Length: 181
Picture (cartoon, rainbow, N blue to C red):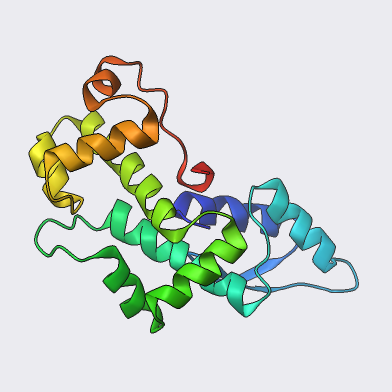
């Protein structure tokens, strides 16, 4: 669950199925249900149908916490006033070393944590370009790139098109955050 929209949809589906939602936040839900009428398999089926799943192991919970922290930092915090390195932010949020976080993330997601962060940054850059409120220099600064050239090179490498080509395109290459890889 990575957006408030997801929370509303999941809450609605749970309630339709007779599952009481006691508490819900990004990545977490406290529910109550009659186990004589509703099984864990039914709960999982509702979630899978909505494009998510139950998180059962400590490592899976940690990976979800990492994902939420990346999404929070890249998509929701306009990081202009206090540039925070993504790795420092994750270490602070979890209290664990970046090397450990990276290893657990890669073992569960089959993509490196660094690439996950970059994919999120690229999608956020697309959003910022589409809004047409900031210059590319301002976007580069905001997204913690050392230069416009570095942003442009990474954008081209990850999307296969230059920033200019993206601006001239139909911009249909944007992807939902939960479908970046």
